Length: 215
Image 1 (cartoon, rainbow, N blue to C red):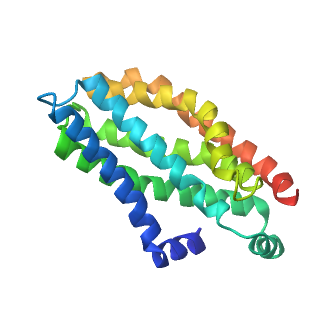
Image 2 (cartoon, one colour; image 1 turned 120 degrees about the horizontal axis):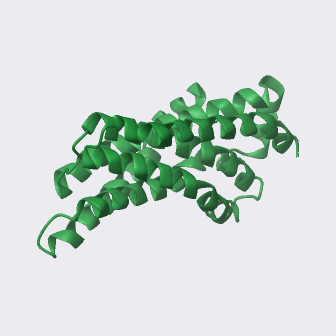
């Protein structure tokens, strides 16, 4: 994970490109609704924000694994266990998505207003969403990377979207509860389900990634 963070810091243009993508998407959304004379309704505000984060996650999650050459993967194979590599990639993707999501929320709130009534719960749902997207997409990105540079990006989107549907439904439910200011007890079920899904995906990644790496 530290290696990926150092590389990301040295290649700050890549992170800047992701931030520019998120900022540009938020600004285009602002222009679209400003022409209609106001901010979007609260449900549309919430759904649009998660759509922006979803596509940002699809663009960010596969970069680390897809950019590694076969020789570098062979070197990793000699110095590290594959289980440690996949857990480090999940942690790195989580931090990367969190670094994209929090500035996106700030800019989104400044341009499109902020109808959220329970701010701490909404921020917690974003952090949980970053974790869920990272765990779900990291293994899929590993599979896509094995397809090579030509088809990896397309395969990531094809395999990733069906996996993310139940995750996104739970995340939208939790964030909608925060948006409406409902009692936090109403969000306990979806939060527990999300944590359970994350544990299952991490466990599957831990068990299956060594076989994927050796293939």
